[in-house]
Structures are given as structure tokens and as C-alpha cells.
Image (cartoon, rainbow, N blue to C red; front, side, top):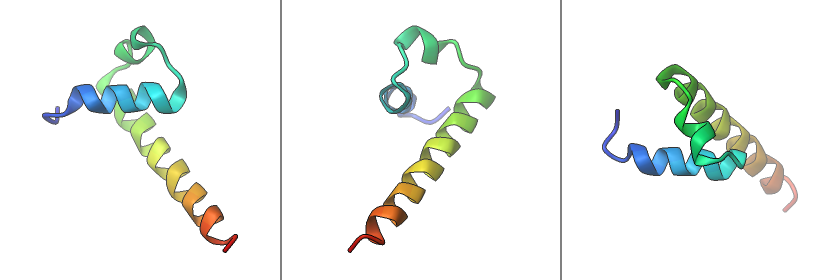
Length: 53
């Protein structure tokens, strides 16, 4: 687990609008998968926004 694991959990909770209980109930594998998905979504969104310039 990275040193900033609490921040990562808070970021995921904010991104997906989860409660602390929901994010705290995920397994490590689930947390990694959801983090990867959030990064993918963010990157796609940035591409979309860059295309509007």
C-alpha cells in the first residue's frame, strides 16, 4: 500500500461520490481497478476538452 493510501481512498470516494463506508469495503484489487478506471476516464475527458480549442 502506498504511503498516501488515505488520500487515494478519499480521491476515489470524491470521484465516484462514494461514502467512506463504500470505499472502505473494497478489496485492494478492486481499489486498483477503480483507480485505473478513474485515470482512464480523466485522460479521455482531457482529450475531449483539448479537442474543443
